[in-house]
Length: 190
Image (cartoon, rainbow, N blue to C red; front, side, top):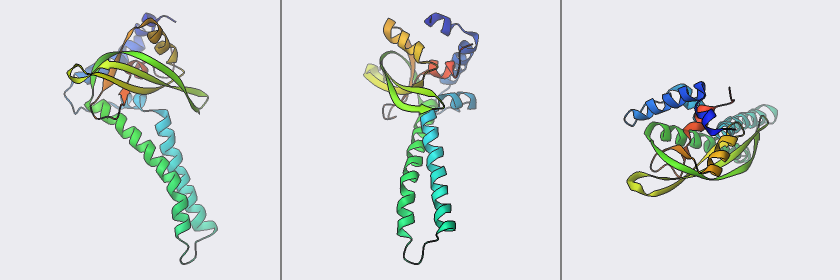
């Protein structure tokens, strides 16, 4: 796979143009829905949906199948805590992604590590991409983003060739960086 061929793809180039137009606006900026949909992590969305779904399921099961008797309300409350915590983690990750998009700035960096994650959703393997870049005031920063197997080949080539990649980073985002090329590549190659 040629890194330049991916960058010159009309669909990828158009999305990169929309991202750079958005980033040219002063922060906090309005994030277009198309960019937000492509930037959010499928893992965070999965955690949110599964947490909420299991919380509702458990609540219905306890209230319909075996309603708690007086003084037994602690057990259902304790059982609901775990899926609710999973939903909160997913919601937090989505909020951090939104904050990075609305308040972040573009930087140039290098991919330093690409590791597979033990997560498969709809047959897609996910990877953790670690990037190193010069952040605010020239400080060396490290950030990470989750990518899937549709764009992993691009980032592997960028890592191996030492190619610069663009990074969206917002201070105080707990190490979260977004990779515009991941957003631009999306779900498939044309």
